[in-house]
Amino acid sequence: MKRIGVISDTHMKRPDRYLEKVAKKHLKDVDMVIHAGDMVCLDVLDIFHEMGKNIIAVCGNMDMADVREYYPAKRQITIEGITIGITHGWGSPDGIRQRIRPSFDKVDAIVYGHTHQAFSGVESGILFFNPGSPTESRFTTSNSVGIIEVHDNNIKGEIITL
Image 1 (tube, rainbow, N blue to C red):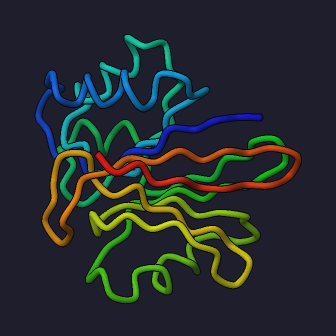
Image 2: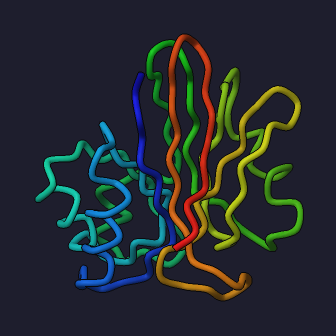
């Protein structure tokens, strides 16, 4: 089984003690971390590097030039036979899953961000997973991160409210 920590919309210019505390408490036992964009600055990922985590990331609409140059706007990975598309997303929170779906062919899951609204649900056979934001609560009443587990060609997502 692979456990993947999922985070998005940190909106920070540098990591701080709060994000470090969240990472060490909730993401310490994961095999890798996915950041679904809007980290703003590459330094935000230092916490995960220091924890020895493999990081898969995409850039978002609020990311600075160094992030946009280093990470693509979308990517696709395969873990234990499960294909996961990763993108930040764009536009209004309403209808975002319908907008991002055509970005990927033949995926089992799509990880996205942008809305700051945590979501884990299957639509048309695809797991859509948005971890929300650990630091920004606009558009929602709580902060969150997520965990995705891949095991025996199955995938499931869990939202962790902070």
